[in-house]
Length: 276
Ligand code: DGL
Image (tube, rainbow, N blue to C red; front, side, top):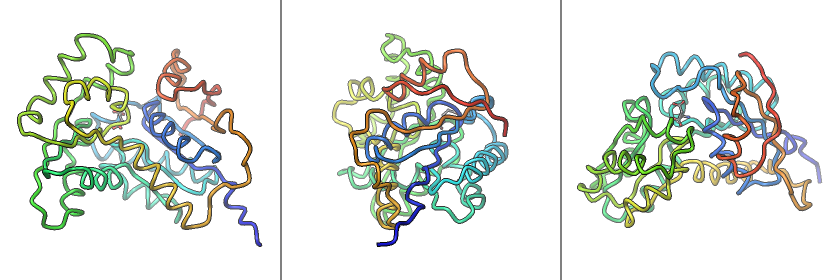
């Protein structure tokens, strides 16, 4: 049998900052044996309240960097990038497969929803782009659907400050999702890298609602794409104690290690500082 050396190449993941580590956490859950390169554009985060034009420019630079590192697959872990700049990522990806957050989470939401009332929360840029709404409408055909969207700009700083359990966070979150509760949504897409860290709280506020973690569903898509292309890393079969990830950042925040740990659930190696 011929060995496809492509299998050994890393999976490239990028995000506006450290939030994409919630996606990386899901990737190593489904694909623990793979090698990863993670790029966090920490110098320019957040992307979520920037214009589509500037996000496209940043996304192109992040993609070029990952391509230069010879990855076999590119994951745009940032929902904002996936919403407004996935075409740019694909254009710069040098024919490599690209996975964004929107399509996998949209199809999962459609599968999960019984009453066709789906909620989407994300950054301002993600919600104004209507990327989720359009994708869900496209995938559903003519089904009688209703999508309710809400930007939740305070969630990113709340999570980065580790305030998930703070009493004020519950008040803010309840206010954000009130209209969706009133509208009887039965499925809520967590359309931002940071929101899975708030899933416990959101589930408390909306106990009957199914939460969709975009990183989880993108990881299942990555597994399927690599399996179909026979590009899974199958050499490393031994017990994986620590995922093999090389981290790059465009700025080194003082609390990187603690924040990375919070998103990943395991200790990360020190990142390498680069400029794009
Ligand atoms: N990573 C972004 C997203 O998923 C959130 C942080 C930011 O605004 O850059 O939309």
